[in-house]
Image (cartoon, rainbow over all chains, first blue to last red; front, side, top):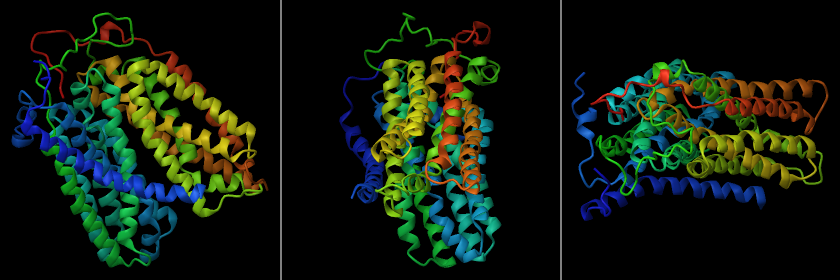
Length: 42
Length: 449
């Protein structure tokens, strides 16, 4: 069995939700990190 | 053993399931357990409210790292047998319970409960969670195993980026036992919810599944990549396993040497120059190294899919040794050179962690790669003690001898160069695994995900 070349339409919202679940908190962490970086080069 | 909902047979992906749902499932676990690197946020509040010294307040973290190595080593086979949903669920239960027990400990003034809760129970969650998605990701991404494991293990590096500011904001400026207990309670509950996405979403591929248009290479131009399988019990009998153990241990030791003392190191280095580094700027340096550690996990591990595992470790160890030499020779003459070298070294440190599962897969196949990875992580436990011990002991003795500035660290850097050279040689000694260690090929044998 091979991977289908297209994703089932019903799965797209699930993919978006799953990635948003991890990317949003990760983005918060990266934003906080850049605030600290300003202190090094500021 | 009947595991019901958690059993591997319940999570075989149906036709049309996309493999791109597996990395976020893995990330939800790794971003959570990566909180361990942010334990220092709780240290000072605990010391003030429970009247502890620095050594005592480190105990929960230290026990957690020891338990991580032990549970990954001894629980690896169980993780392989029961599958990733079981492993992620167990990890969530242990990690969240650890916080809840710690909350009870702080609320009742019983610090030993914090040690047992966060370090003991939570530490098991760290170890099982760390290895839980590795073999599953390798099987979903046989065409890009380095990239797939790099994404997940990058999450472990990124966990502290989220936890550190989040925990700090919860504790406030003058935390009480009530504030700390509440923070632990909230951490336990929020991480339980966040990690649930992992065990709900994770799927294993069907035995005959493969990516569209991808065929396993039959041309063995890259002789290091094996199509045979080796069991975890046999793997630890091979010289390849112990060569990789040395490689990982010394690569991690060299990275931790800088990471653990990054803040005082940069302050000491440039104290006597015309451009000294203040405490706030040193915090920025630590943040920069965290970013490089995290990005190195993804970038270098993905690169290893293109250039090969052995070559990428040649870079980590060989170029890493040269960069340490540059720091040792240039001393404090250039802040930019020091920062750039430290950034690259830390990216190699992260890359070393993230690339090793794919290296194991190349050598030992996918059969029990998770269990083998768990056993290899004992190298991390050793490096976690060795790296800080070398740098701190030498810096203390140099200070006692009246030295200051870069002289406090130069000897440590030369030791790190030596360790990296030993690691480089160990990597050169890695050869394909002999056939006598291979599992017999028989009908119906499948890889455990």
